[in-house]
Every structure is written in C-alpha cells, then in structure tokens.
Image (cartoon, rainbow, N blue to C red; front, side):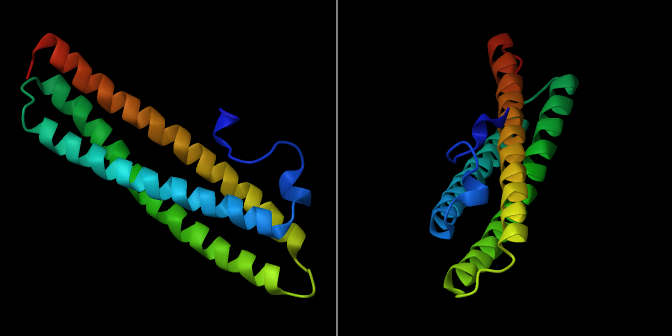
Amino acid sequence: MKFFRNRPKGDFIENGNLQELYILTEHWKSDLLFYRDDLKFLRHLEDKYFLWIKAQTDLENIRKAGESILKDTRDCDDLLERVDQHLVQLSVLINETEKHNQKEFRTEHMELEETISQFIENTRENRRQLFKVIEFDVETNTL
C-alpha cells in the first residue's frame, strides 16, 4: 500500500533539492492536520454512537474501534511533532552554506515518509472498521 506517498517517483529524496523537500514536508504536515481533525470527528462519532448500542458484541466492536482511533490520535500528534522538528532541521540545512549531513537527513526523510504512509494506511483501515460496525447496526436496527 505504498500509494499514500505524495512525492515524485524515482530518486527524488536522494537527489531532489532541499526546497522541494521542504514543500513536500509542508504537505505532510497539512495532511496530518487534516487527519487530526478527522480523528477528532471519528472520536466524537464513536462517543455518540456508544450511547445507543444495546448488544454486547456491538459494544465490544465499538470499543475496539475507539481504542484504535485513540491510538491513531496519539500517533498523529507524535508525527506532527516529528514533522515540525524535521522542518526545523530542513530549514537549517537550506540556510547552511556547507551542505553536510544531507545523506543522513535524507535517510531520516525517507523513514519519516514511510511512517506517515503507514499511519495513513492504519487510520483509513480503522475508519473503515468503525463505519462497518455502525453500518451493520443501523442496517439491523440494533440501536
């Protein structure tokens, strides 16, 4: 599921200029801010839905979905912090006249991109699970 990446293909990270990497990182931050708001909505939905559930199995399913959403929220906050730190490092590198430690930085950039990609994949799957539980109960009128 590597289609969550938001960069040109090929050796962009290894050879792209730092300004382009900065712009890409700003896109990551924007995406993560969107996911943070989306997760807030999902937590609200789960909280409201939880009040109406009658069946014990549905309670367990919604509890599991809620725990996953809570974990995603913590992961999102951590990623936002990492992206902010990454942007600071990137701006320092851009402003340096001597371009040292770029290889190490670019490796960190790729690792951060992989972590964000995995986060997006997990968050989408957890959203699907929550909606599946709600949809099943609405269709079977167990609320």
